[in-house]
Length: 162
Image (cartoon, rainbow, N blue to C red; front, side, top):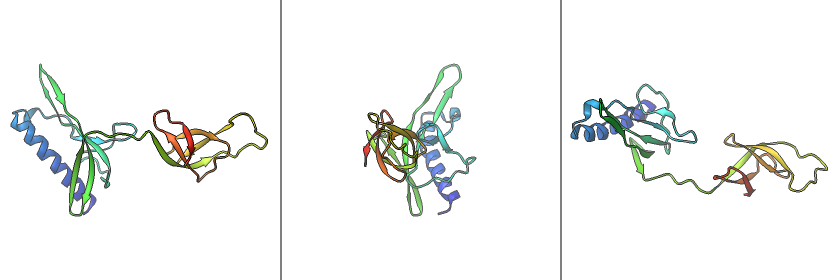
């Protein structure tokens, strides 16, 4: 399946379920909000779920479907459902998920770590490190590039070696 076929299949599916529901309730003409977008660290991320966005939809990509209607002089409503893209051979099937629950801790690889300063023996000495995601944290001086570490997702701090 080509990138264009994947995007068209997903967009068609989203539009069908969205327009069907809104038209059933006689609000189809007021459907003016975009279909949705990718979800990630920044919440509103690419791709935008529209044919104008050429971003490829990868298998297991997380996104949100958030159709909205706006009624002049009354107000509007937008309902959001999170999805995971499942590329099942010749079909793209968004799987609706109730919620995304982040783990309390994640295992990440240290991409870059400063060299330890010889003779630095203060209590719990730390140095800067950059993780595989680009996130910068403080780690103990014995951590080297390429090592796996556990990071607390609530505070974003080093916990231990993996």
